[in-house]
Image (cartoon, rainbow, N blue to C red; front, side, top):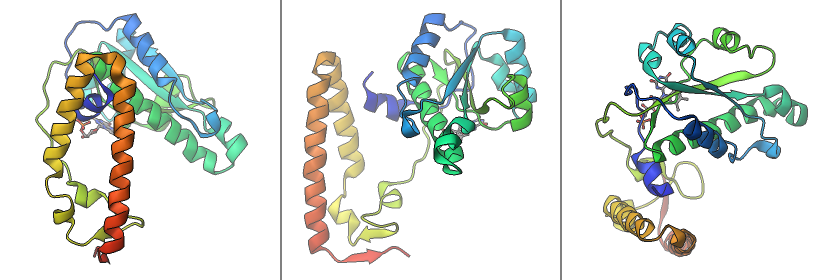
Length: 239
Ligand SMILES: Cc1cc2nc3c(=O)[nH]c(=O)nc-3n(C[C@H](O)[C@H](O)[C@H](O)COP(=O)(O)O)c2cc1C
């Protein structure tokens, strides 16, 4: 599965088959998480792999009674080390530590999905109790609990905002007038492009570098077009 398809087809999975997750898969997912960017390249995220069934059963007690968590065959816990970041970056370090862990969490979700596993980001927990449960108090902060297993559900398609609700140009709130004319069939273009990329990755995974280069070129072209368009168009602020 290529990265674009992994990103667009990943969903939160909250029901799992009884089938265990292999240690090799869990190990591989952690290796992927270790490639996550981090402020100052401090790589301060840490991971706890939990396969102890009794511990997994107890997790809902600290996670707002989310009972479904107890059915997961495995759990990966993502920890941050605010103290490590604060030593270098002062007060900002606290936020950096959390951001690093969040980025690692997303890498874990995508890697699990690409391996055919299902997972869900859980941060709805009692901080003090969960830190204590994992013996992290005073050493690290639990940022995410990720139940993982083979999916026993296929989530309904979710509604998403359209790009013109999400994207501004140059400054927050700035929109190109007549956005629809500029980019009218964007949803179709996106689907077509994802389909093409999927086929190309299937054909030859070794051609990945070429595809990425193509995307880079396309992005550059689009960027130039947008700049030209902006120069011509009236730019108005969104209310
Ligand atoms: C910071 C954060 C905390 C979350 N905490 C929980 C949680 O405690 N329980 C849960 O079931 N899902 C949790 N989620 C998952 C979201 O509910 C889910 O990502 C969202 O509904 C979108 O669905 P999708 O993941 O299928 O795209 C969390 C997601 C994020 C990013």
